Length: 521
Image (cartoon, rainbow, N blue to C red):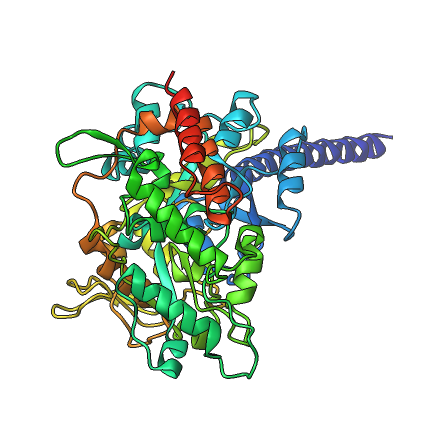
Protein backbone atom coordinates (compact mmCIF):
# COMPACT_ATOMS: atom_id res chain seq x y z
CA UNK A 1 0.00 0.00 0.00
CA UNK A 2 2.83 2.38 0.96
CA UNK A 3 4.49 1.71 -2.39
CA UNK A 4 1.21 2.43 -4.22
CA UNK A 5 0.71 5.69 -2.27
CA UNK A 6 4.27 6.85 -3.13
CA UNK A 7 3.70 6.09 -6.81
CA UNK A 8 0.39 7.97 -6.79
CA UNK A 9 2.08 10.98 -5.10
CA UNK A 10 4.84 10.88 -7.74
CA UNK A 11 2.25 10.72 -10.52
CA UNK A 12 0.26 13.60 -9.01
CA UNK A 13 3.41 15.72 -8.64
CA UNK A 14 4.34 15.07 -12.24
CA UNK A 15 0.80 15.87 -13.40
CA UNK A 16 0.82 19.12 -11.44
CA UNK A 17 4.22 20.02 -12.85
CA UNK A 18 3.11 19.16 -16.39
CA UNK A 19 -0.09 21.13 -15.91
CA UNK A 20 1.79 24.12 -14.59
CA UNK A 21 4.22 24.00 -17.48
CA UNK A 22 1.33 23.66 -19.92
CA UNK A 23 -0.45 26.65 -18.41
CA UNK A 24 2.73 28.70 -18.56
CA UNK A 25 3.25 27.73 -22.18
CA UNK A 26 -0.32 28.68 -22.99
CA UNK A 27 0.08 32.02 -21.27
CA UNK A 28 3.36 32.73 -23.02
CA UNK A 29 2.00 31.67 -26.41
CA UNK A 30 -1.17 33.68 -25.83
CA UNK A 31 0.76 36.79 -24.93
CA UNK A 32 3.07 36.22 -27.89
CA UNK A 33 0.06 35.73 -30.14
CA UNK A 34 -1.57 39.00 -29.12
CA UNK A 35 1.74 40.86 -29.29
CA UNK A 36 2.19 39.42 -32.77
CA UNK A 37 -1.31 40.43 -33.78
CA UNK A 38 -0.90 43.96 -32.44
CA UNK A 39 2.48 44.38 -34.08
CA UNK A 40 1.21 42.93 -37.37
CA UNK A 41 -1.85 45.18 -37.42
CA UNK A 42 0.30 48.21 -36.71
CA UNK A 43 2.98 47.30 -39.26
CA UNK A 44 0.69 46.26 -42.08
CA UNK A 45 -2.09 48.85 -41.93
CA UNK A 46 -3.48 48.83 -45.45
CA UNK A 47 -4.88 51.91 -47.16
CA UNK A 48 -7.21 51.16 -50.06
CA UNK A 49 -7.37 53.69 -52.89
CA UNK A 50 -9.90 53.77 -55.72
CA UNK A 51 -8.34 54.80 -59.01
CA UNK A 52 -9.66 55.31 -62.52
CA UNK A 53 -8.36 52.89 -65.13
CA UNK A 54 -5.46 54.41 -67.06
CA UNK A 55 -4.16 52.93 -70.31
CA UNK A 56 -0.67 54.19 -69.54
CA UNK A 57 -0.26 52.41 -66.18
CA UNK A 58 0.48 48.66 -66.21
CA UNK A 59 -0.42 47.87 -62.60
CA UNK A 60 -0.91 50.33 -59.75
CA UNK A 61 -0.32 47.67 -57.10
CA UNK A 62 3.14 46.70 -58.40
CA UNK A 63 4.02 50.21 -59.56
CA UNK A 64 7.41 51.70 -58.61
CA UNK A 65 5.68 54.83 -57.26
CA UNK A 66 3.40 52.69 -55.06
CA UNK A 67 6.43 50.93 -53.57
CA UNK A 68 8.12 54.30 -53.05
CA UNK A 69 5.06 55.66 -51.20
CA UNK A 70 4.85 52.53 -49.06
CA UNK A 71 8.52 52.82 -48.07
CA UNK A 72 8.18 56.51 -47.19
CA UNK A 73 4.80 56.32 -45.41
CA UNK A 74 5.13 52.97 -43.64
CA UNK A 75 1.67 51.89 -44.85
CA UNK A 76 0.65 49.18 -47.27
CA UNK A 77 -1.25 50.56 -50.24
CA UNK A 78 -3.65 48.63 -52.41
CA UNK A 79 -5.71 49.88 -55.32
CA UNK A 80 -9.22 49.14 -56.44
CA UNK A 81 -9.85 49.82 -60.12
CA UNK A 82 -12.85 51.71 -61.42
CA UNK A 83 -14.06 50.52 -64.82
CA UNK A 84 -14.07 52.94 -67.73
CA UNK A 85 -17.50 54.36 -68.39
CA UNK A 86 -18.74 53.66 -64.85
CA UNK A 87 -16.67 56.19 -62.91
CA UNK A 88 -19.54 58.43 -61.83
CA UNK A 89 -21.82 55.54 -60.87
CA UNK A 90 -19.05 53.87 -58.89
CA UNK A 91 -18.10 57.00 -56.99
CA UNK A 92 -21.70 57.89 -56.14
CA UNK A 93 -22.36 54.37 -54.84
CA UNK A 94 -19.08 54.26 -52.92
CA UNK A 95 -19.73 57.57 -51.17
CA UNK A 96 -23.13 56.52 -49.77
CA UNK A 97 -22.07 53.00 -48.78
CA UNK A 98 -21.80 52.34 -45.04
CA UNK A 99 -18.64 50.28 -45.51
CA UNK A 100 -17.12 50.77 -48.95
CA UNK A 101 -13.61 49.83 -47.84
CA UNK A 102 -12.20 52.78 -49.79
CA UNK A 103 -9.93 55.16 -47.90
CA UNK A 104 -9.05 57.58 -50.70
CA UNK A 105 -9.85 58.31 -54.34
CA UNK A 106 -7.38 59.40 -57.01
CA UNK A 107 -8.63 61.38 -59.99
CA UNK A 108 -6.91 61.43 -63.37
CA UNK A 109 -6.04 65.02 -64.30
CA UNK A 110 -7.98 64.64 -67.56
CA UNK A 111 -11.13 63.23 -65.99
CA UNK A 112 -14.15 65.52 -65.75
CA UNK A 113 -16.36 63.51 -63.43
CA UNK A 114 -16.06 65.97 -60.55
CA UNK A 115 -16.20 69.75 -60.54
CA UNK A 116 -15.12 71.89 -57.62
CA UNK A 117 -18.75 72.92 -57.04
CA UNK A 118 -19.89 69.30 -56.95
CA UNK A 119 -17.15 68.20 -54.55
CA UNK A 120 -18.04 71.08 -52.21
CA UNK A 121 -21.68 70.02 -52.32
CA UNK A 122 -20.73 66.44 -51.45
CA UNK A 123 -18.47 67.74 -48.70
CA UNK A 124 -21.24 69.78 -47.11
CA UNK A 125 -23.31 66.57 -47.00
CA UNK A 126 -20.50 64.83 -45.12
CA UNK A 127 -19.78 62.47 -48.00
CA UNK A 128 -16.26 63.85 -48.50
CA UNK A 129 -13.87 64.67 -45.65
CA UNK A 130 -12.97 68.26 -44.80
CA UNK A 131 -9.17 67.95 -44.62
CA UNK A 132 -8.54 71.47 -43.30
CA UNK A 133 -7.89 70.15 -39.77
CA UNK A 134 -5.04 68.01 -41.11
CA UNK A 135 -3.38 70.86 -43.03
CA UNK A 136 -0.69 72.27 -40.74
CA UNK A 137 1.97 74.83 -41.53
CA UNK A 138 4.56 72.07 -41.91
CA UNK A 139 2.44 70.05 -44.36
CA UNK A 140 3.26 69.87 -48.06
CA UNK A 141 -0.30 70.96 -48.82
CA UNK A 142 0.17 74.24 -46.94
CA UNK A 143 3.53 74.88 -48.61
CA UNK A 144 2.31 74.51 -52.20
CA UNK A 145 -0.87 76.49 -51.58
CA UNK A 146 1.36 79.45 -50.70
CA UNK A 147 4.07 78.79 -53.28
CA UNK A 148 1.72 78.61 -56.27
CA UNK A 149 -0.85 81.19 -55.17
CA UNK A 150 -3.72 78.75 -55.32
CA UNK A 151 -6.07 81.60 -54.63
CA UNK A 152 -9.17 79.62 -53.75
CA UNK A 153 -7.41 77.02 -51.60
CA UNK A 154 -5.09 79.48 -49.85
CA UNK A 155 -8.07 81.66 -48.95
CA UNK A 156 -9.96 78.65 -47.58
CA UNK A 157 -6.99 77.62 -45.43
CA UNK A 158 -6.37 81.15 -44.15
CA UNK A 159 -10.00 81.68 -43.17
CA UNK A 160 -10.47 78.18 -41.70
CA UNK A 161 -12.95 77.24 -44.40
CA UNK A 162 -13.51 73.64 -45.44
CA UNK A 163 -11.06 72.07 -47.91
CA UNK A 164 -12.27 68.95 -49.68
CA UNK A 165 -9.68 67.92 -52.25
CA UNK A 166 -5.99 67.50 -53.01
CA UNK A 167 -4.65 69.44 -56.02
CA UNK A 168 -3.32 68.21 -59.31
CA UNK A 169 -1.77 71.21 -61.03
CA UNK A 170 0.05 71.81 -64.29
CA UNK A 171 2.90 74.22 -63.50
CA UNK A 172 4.33 74.49 -67.01
CA UNK A 173 4.21 77.71 -69.02
CA UNK A 174 1.71 76.13 -71.39
CA UNK A 175 -0.87 76.00 -68.57
CA UNK A 176 -0.90 79.81 -68.56
CA UNK A 177 -1.72 80.08 -72.26
CA UNK A 178 -5.45 80.01 -72.95
CA UNK A 179 -5.65 78.88 -76.57
CA UNK A 180 -3.54 78.00 -79.61
CA UNK A 181 -4.57 77.59 -83.22
CA UNK A 182 -3.08 74.55 -84.96
CA UNK A 183 -2.91 74.36 -88.77
CA UNK A 184 -2.31 71.43 -91.09
CA UNK A 185 1.24 72.05 -92.29
CA UNK A 186 0.97 69.22 -94.81
CA UNK A 187 -1.86 71.06 -96.55
CA UNK A 188 0.11 74.29 -96.58
CA UNK A 189 3.04 72.52 -98.25
CA UNK A 190 0.83 70.73 -100.77
CA UNK A 191 -0.67 74.05 -101.86
CA UNK A 192 2.52 76.11 -101.61
CA UNK A 193 1.06 78.36 -98.90
CA UNK A 194 2.57 80.13 -95.91
CA UNK A 195 1.20 80.25 -92.37
CA UNK A 196 -1.30 83.15 -92.32
CA UNK A 197 -0.32 86.24 -90.35
CA UNK A 198 -3.49 88.34 -90.72
CA UNK A 199 -7.23 87.79 -90.75
CA UNK A 200 -7.30 88.45 -94.52
CA UNK A 201 -4.55 85.93 -95.16
CA UNK A 202 -6.42 83.35 -93.09
CA UNK A 203 -9.48 83.73 -95.33
CA UNK A 204 -7.36 83.07 -98.43
CA UNK A 205 -5.74 80.00 -96.85
CA UNK A 206 -9.10 78.57 -95.76
CA UNK A 207 -10.57 79.14 -99.24
CA UNK A 208 -7.63 77.24 -100.73
CA UNK A 209 -8.16 74.43 -98.22
CA UNK A 210 -11.81 74.21 -99.27
CA UNK A 211 -11.34 74.35 -103.04
CA UNK A 212 -7.96 72.84 -103.95
CA UNK A 213 -8.02 69.29 -102.52
CA UNK A 214 -5.09 69.71 -100.11
CA UNK A 215 -5.35 66.12 -98.83
CA UNK A 216 -4.95 64.90 -102.42
CA UNK A 217 -7.71 62.28 -102.39
CA UNK A 218 -9.70 63.69 -105.33
CA UNK A 219 -12.69 64.52 -103.11
CA UNK A 220 -13.98 67.78 -101.70
CA UNK A 221 -14.16 66.39 -98.18
CA UNK A 222 -11.88 68.85 -96.41
CA UNK A 223 -13.00 70.81 -93.34
CA UNK A 224 -11.00 74.08 -93.46
CA UNK A 225 -11.65 75.02 -89.82
CA UNK A 226 -13.55 73.21 -87.08
CA UNK A 227 -14.67 74.14 -83.59
CA UNK A 228 -16.42 72.65 -80.54
CA UNK A 229 -18.70 74.13 -77.89
CA UNK A 230 -17.70 71.88 -74.98
CA UNK A 231 -14.88 74.16 -73.86
CA UNK A 232 -13.87 77.76 -74.47
CA UNK A 233 -10.42 76.82 -75.74
CA UNK A 234 -11.94 74.49 -78.37
CA UNK A 235 -14.04 77.36 -79.76
CA UNK A 236 -12.02 78.56 -82.74
CA UNK A 237 -13.88 81.87 -82.91
CA UNK A 238 -12.43 82.92 -79.53
CA UNK A 239 -9.01 82.85 -81.16
CA UNK A 240 -10.30 84.86 -84.15
CA UNK A 241 -11.95 87.52 -81.98
CA UNK A 242 -8.57 88.31 -80.40
CA UNK A 243 -7.55 89.84 -83.73
CA UNK A 244 -10.25 92.49 -83.21
CA UNK A 245 -10.29 93.10 -79.44
CA UNK A 246 -8.90 91.45 -76.33
CA UNK A 247 -11.25 88.50 -75.81
CA UNK A 248 -10.93 86.56 -72.54
CA UNK A 249 -14.04 84.40 -72.05
CA UNK A 250 -12.70 82.96 -68.78
CA UNK A 251 -13.03 86.43 -67.22
CA UNK A 252 -16.33 87.33 -68.79
CA UNK A 253 -14.66 89.16 -71.73
CA UNK A 254 -13.93 92.05 -69.35
CA UNK A 255 -10.49 93.63 -69.03
CA UNK A 256 -8.62 96.70 -67.85
CA UNK A 257 -7.16 99.01 -70.47
CA UNK A 258 -3.79 100.79 -70.18
CA UNK A 259 -5.45 103.54 -68.13
CA UNK A 260 -6.98 101.12 -65.66
CA UNK A 261 -10.46 101.59 -67.11
CA UNK A 262 -12.79 98.61 -67.22
CA UNK A 263 -13.64 97.53 -70.78
CA UNK A 264 -16.57 95.26 -71.60
CA UNK A 265 -15.31 93.76 -74.85
CA UNK A 266 -18.66 92.13 -75.70
CA UNK A 267 -20.34 95.51 -76.27
CA UNK A 268 -17.57 97.22 -78.27
CA UNK A 269 -17.77 97.86 -82.03
CA UNK A 270 -14.53 95.91 -82.57
CA UNK A 271 -16.19 92.88 -81.00
CA UNK A 272 -19.09 93.29 -83.41
CA UNK A 273 -16.66 93.45 -86.34
CA UNK A 274 -15.03 90.25 -85.11
CA UNK A 275 -18.40 88.51 -84.98
CA UNK A 276 -19.15 89.72 -88.50
CA UNK A 277 -15.83 88.23 -89.67
CA UNK A 278 -16.67 84.88 -88.04
CA UNK A 279 -20.17 84.98 -89.55
CA UNK A 280 -18.65 85.38 -93.05
CA UNK A 281 -16.42 82.33 -92.46
CA UNK A 282 -19.42 80.34 -91.32
CA UNK A 283 -21.63 81.41 -94.27
CA UNK A 284 -18.92 80.29 -96.71
CA UNK A 285 -18.39 77.00 -94.84
CA UNK A 286 -14.79 77.92 -94.09
CA UNK A 287 -15.73 77.51 -90.45
CA UNK A 288 -17.54 74.16 -90.61
CA UNK A 289 -21.34 74.49 -90.55
CA UNK A 290 -21.46 71.46 -88.23
CA UNK A 291 -18.94 72.79 -85.74
CA UNK A 292 -21.49 73.96 -83.18
CA UNK A 293 -22.82 70.43 -82.88
CA UNK A 294 -19.54 68.52 -82.54
CA UNK A 295 -18.81 66.89 -79.23
CA UNK A 296 -15.23 66.98 -78.01
CA UNK A 297 -14.95 63.29 -78.86
CA UNK A 298 -16.21 63.90 -82.42
CA UNK A 299 -13.73 66.74 -82.87
CA UNK A 300 -10.89 64.45 -81.79
CA UNK A 301 -12.01 61.71 -84.16
CA UNK A 302 -12.10 64.13 -87.08
CA UNK A 303 -8.60 65.47 -86.44
CA UNK A 304 -7.16 61.99 -85.84
CA UNK A 305 -8.85 60.48 -88.89
CA UNK A 306 -6.16 58.99 -91.18
CA UNK A 307 -8.09 60.45 -94.13
CA UNK A 308 -6.55 63.83 -93.20
CA UNK A 309 -9.75 65.88 -93.11
CA UNK A 310 -9.07 68.96 -90.96
CA UNK A 311 -7.29 72.19 -91.86
CA UNK A 312 -7.16 73.89 -88.44
CA UNK A 313 -8.59 73.84 -84.93
CA UNK A 314 -7.85 75.36 -81.53
CA UNK A 315 -6.96 73.85 -78.15
CA UNK A 316 -4.89 74.57 -75.06
CA UNK A 317 -2.44 71.69 -75.63
CA UNK A 318 -2.14 69.81 -78.88
CA UNK A 319 -2.67 66.60 -76.89
CA UNK A 320 -6.15 67.84 -75.93
CA UNK A 321 -7.18 66.89 -79.46
CA UNK A 322 -4.50 64.76 -81.14
CA UNK A 323 -3.73 61.40 -79.57
CA UNK A 324 -0.22 61.23 -78.17
CA UNK A 325 0.35 57.85 -79.80
CA UNK A 326 -0.17 59.34 -83.29
CA UNK A 327 3.27 60.90 -83.99
CA UNK A 328 2.64 61.41 -87.71
CA UNK A 329 -0.50 63.45 -87.06
CA UNK A 330 1.16 65.39 -84.22
CA UNK A 331 4.06 66.33 -86.46
CA UNK A 332 1.65 67.42 -89.20
CA UNK A 333 0.21 70.40 -87.28
CA UNK A 334 1.96 73.67 -86.53
CA UNK A 335 0.93 76.67 -84.45
CA UNK A 336 -0.52 79.77 -86.08
CA UNK A 337 0.67 82.90 -84.20
CA UNK A 338 -2.03 85.30 -82.98
CA UNK A 339 -3.50 86.94 -86.07
CA UNK A 340 -3.24 90.64 -86.85
CA UNK A 341 -6.69 92.18 -87.33
CA UNK A 342 -7.85 95.08 -89.52
CA UNK A 343 -6.87 97.66 -86.87
CA UNK A 344 -3.59 95.97 -85.94
CA UNK A 345 -5.00 94.21 -82.88
CA UNK A 346 -3.11 91.02 -82.03
CA UNK A 347 -3.67 89.33 -78.69
CA UNK A 348 -3.05 86.07 -76.84
CA UNK A 349 -4.75 85.39 -73.52
CA UNK A 350 -2.74 84.56 -70.42
CA UNK A 351 -4.67 82.74 -67.71
CA UNK A 352 -4.07 81.94 -64.05
CA UNK A 353 -3.11 78.34 -63.38
CA UNK A 354 -5.59 76.82 -60.98
CA UNK A 355 -5.38 73.27 -59.65
CA UNK A 356 -7.67 70.49 -60.75
CA UNK A 357 -9.00 67.84 -58.38
CA UNK A 358 -6.30 65.21 -57.80
CA UNK A 359 -7.96 63.22 -55.06
CA UNK A 360 -10.12 63.24 -51.96
CA UNK A 361 -11.00 61.22 -48.86
CA UNK A 362 -14.51 59.71 -48.68
CA UNK A 363 -16.50 60.44 -45.54
CA UNK A 364 -16.82 56.69 -44.85
CA UNK A 365 -13.04 56.09 -44.96
CA UNK A 366 -11.75 54.00 -42.03
CA UNK A 367 -8.26 55.52 -42.27
CA UNK A 368 -8.74 59.23 -42.82
CA UNK A 369 -5.54 60.39 -41.11
CA UNK A 370 -3.42 57.79 -42.90
CA UNK A 371 -4.99 58.62 -46.27
CA UNK A 372 -4.17 62.29 -45.71
CA UNK A 373 -0.56 61.44 -44.84
CA UNK A 374 -0.12 59.47 -48.08
CA UNK A 375 -1.65 62.15 -50.28
CA UNK A 376 0.21 64.94 -48.52
CA UNK A 377 3.43 62.96 -49.10
CA UNK A 378 2.55 62.92 -52.81
CA UNK A 379 2.71 66.73 -52.77
CA UNK A 380 6.33 66.71 -51.60
CA UNK A 381 9.11 67.79 -53.96
CA UNK A 382 10.68 64.33 -53.92
CA UNK A 383 7.41 62.54 -54.65
CA UNK A 384 6.54 64.88 -57.52
CA UNK A 385 9.76 63.91 -59.31
CA UNK A 386 8.78 60.25 -59.16
CA UNK A 387 5.20 61.09 -60.17
CA UNK A 388 6.38 63.00 -63.23
CA UNK A 389 9.60 61.28 -64.34
CA UNK A 390 9.87 57.89 -62.61
CA UNK A 391 12.97 56.38 -61.01
CA UNK A 392 16.01 58.60 -60.61
CA UNK A 393 19.08 57.28 -62.42
CA UNK A 394 16.97 54.89 -64.48
CA UNK A 395 14.34 57.13 -66.05
CA UNK A 396 15.79 60.59 -65.42
CA UNK A 397 18.71 62.52 -63.99
CA UNK A 398 19.54 66.13 -63.23
CA UNK A 399 20.79 68.04 -66.27
CA UNK A 400 24.32 69.23 -66.70
CA UNK A 401 25.05 72.91 -67.24
CA UNK A 402 24.63 73.96 -70.85
CA UNK A 403 21.60 71.78 -71.58
CA UNK A 404 18.53 73.63 -72.85
CA UNK A 405 14.90 72.86 -72.05
CA UNK A 406 12.00 72.65 -74.50
CA UNK A 407 11.33 76.30 -73.61
CA UNK A 408 14.88 77.34 -74.51
CA UNK A 409 15.88 77.99 -70.88
CA UNK A 410 18.50 76.34 -68.69
CA UNK A 411 17.48 72.70 -68.31
CA UNK A 412 17.05 71.05 -64.91
CA UNK A 413 15.97 67.51 -65.86
CA UNK A 414 17.22 65.11 -68.52
CA UNK A 415 14.95 62.20 -69.34
CA UNK A 416 16.72 58.88 -69.88
CA UNK A 417 13.52 56.94 -70.58
CA UNK A 418 10.60 59.12 -71.55
CA UNK A 419 7.50 57.80 -69.72
CA UNK A 420 4.73 60.13 -70.87
CA UNK A 421 2.02 58.76 -73.14
CA UNK A 422 3.21 55.16 -73.14
CA UNK A 423 2.47 52.05 -71.08
CA UNK A 424 4.79 51.97 -68.06
CA UNK A 425 4.94 50.90 -64.40
CA UNK A 426 7.00 53.68 -62.84
CA UNK A 427 4.31 56.22 -61.88
CA UNK A 428 0.58 56.91 -62.07
CA UNK A 429 0.65 58.79 -65.40
CA UNK A 430 -0.68 62.01 -63.88
CA UNK A 431 -3.34 60.52 -61.58
CA UNK A 432 -3.64 61.61 -57.97
CA UNK A 433 -2.24 64.64 -56.11
CA UNK A 434 0.65 66.18 -58.04
CA UNK A 435 2.26 69.62 -58.12
CA UNK A 436 5.70 69.70 -59.72
CA UNK A 437 8.07 72.59 -59.00
CA UNK A 438 7.62 75.02 -61.89
CA UNK A 439 11.36 75.43 -62.43
CA UNK A 440 11.63 71.69 -62.95
CA UNK A 441 8.40 71.43 -64.98
CA UNK A 442 9.67 74.07 -67.41
CA UNK A 443 13.25 72.78 -67.40
CA UNK A 444 13.03 69.39 -69.12
CA UNK A 445 15.48 68.82 -71.96
CA UNK A 446 14.20 68.11 -75.44
CA UNK A 447 15.09 64.67 -76.79
CA UNK A 448 15.07 65.74 -80.45
CA UNK A 449 11.66 64.21 -81.21
CA UNK A 450 9.62 66.67 -83.28
CA UNK A 451 6.36 64.84 -82.48
CA UNK A 452 6.91 65.09 -78.72
CA UNK A 453 3.85 66.78 -77.20
CA UNK A 454 5.91 68.81 -74.73
CA UNK A 455 8.12 70.12 -77.52
CA UNK A 456 5.18 71.04 -79.77
CA UNK A 457 3.34 72.81 -76.96
CA UNK A 458 6.46 74.65 -75.75
CA UNK A 459 7.28 75.82 -79.26
CA UNK A 460 3.76 77.21 -79.63
CA UNK A 461 3.65 78.87 -76.22
CA UNK A 462 6.94 80.63 -76.83
CA UNK A 463 5.33 82.16 -79.92
CA UNK A 464 2.23 83.30 -78.02
CA UNK A 465 3.84 84.75 -74.90
CA UNK A 466 4.93 87.88 -76.77
CA UNK A 467 1.27 88.81 -77.30
CA UNK A 468 0.00 88.65 -73.73
CA UNK A 469 -1.51 91.88 -72.45
CA UNK A 470 0.36 93.54 -69.61
CA UNK A 471 -2.84 94.18 -67.69
CA UNK A 472 -4.40 90.70 -67.73
CA UNK A 473 -7.06 89.62 -65.40
CA UNK A 474 -9.80 92.12 -64.85
CA UNK A 475 -11.32 91.61 -61.45
CA UNK A 476 -12.71 88.10 -61.32
CA UNK A 477 -15.52 89.24 -59.05
CA UNK A 478 -17.03 91.11 -61.98
CA UNK A 479 -17.27 88.13 -64.31
CA UNK A 480 -18.16 85.61 -61.61
CA UNK A 481 -20.92 87.81 -60.25
CA UNK A 482 -22.51 87.93 -63.71
CA UNK A 483 -22.63 84.27 -64.62
CA UNK A 484 -26.07 84.62 -66.20
CA UNK A 485 -24.79 87.52 -68.30
CA UNK A 486 -21.90 85.37 -69.53
CA UNK A 487 -24.26 82.57 -70.52
CA UNK A 488 -26.44 85.02 -72.41
CA UNK A 489 -23.45 86.47 -74.27
CA UNK A 490 -22.13 83.01 -75.14
CA UNK A 491 -25.50 82.11 -76.61
CA UNK A 492 -25.76 85.37 -78.58
CA UNK A 493 -22.27 84.89 -80.03
CA UNK A 494 -23.48 81.61 -81.56
CA UNK A 495 -26.63 83.27 -82.90
CA UNK A 496 -24.64 86.07 -84.53
CA UNK A 497 -22.03 83.74 -86.06
CA UNK A 498 -24.62 81.29 -87.42
CA UNK A 499 -26.73 84.17 -88.76
CA UNK A 500 -29.79 83.28 -86.69
CA UNK A 501 -29.63 86.92 -85.64
CA UNK A 502 -28.13 89.28 -88.23
CA UNK A 503 -25.00 90.94 -86.91
CA UNK A 504 -25.37 93.68 -89.55
CA UNK A 505 -28.83 94.65 -88.28
CA UNK A 506 -28.40 97.72 -86.04
CA UNK A 507 -31.71 97.15 -84.31
CA UNK A 508 -30.77 93.55 -83.44
CA UNK A 509 -27.42 94.72 -82.11
CA UNK A 510 -29.07 97.41 -79.97
CA UNK A 511 -31.52 94.83 -78.61
CA UNK A 512 -28.56 92.68 -77.65
CA UNK A 513 -26.84 95.60 -75.90
CA UNK A 514 -30.03 96.51 -74.04
CA UNK A 515 -30.35 92.95 -72.78
CA UNK A 516 -26.71 92.88 -71.68
CA UNK A 517 -27.18 96.12 -69.74
CA UNK A 518 -30.07 94.57 -67.83
CA UNK A 519 -27.55 92.32 -66.10
CA UNK A 520 -25.84 95.35 -64.54
CA UNK A 521 -29.02 96.54 -62.84
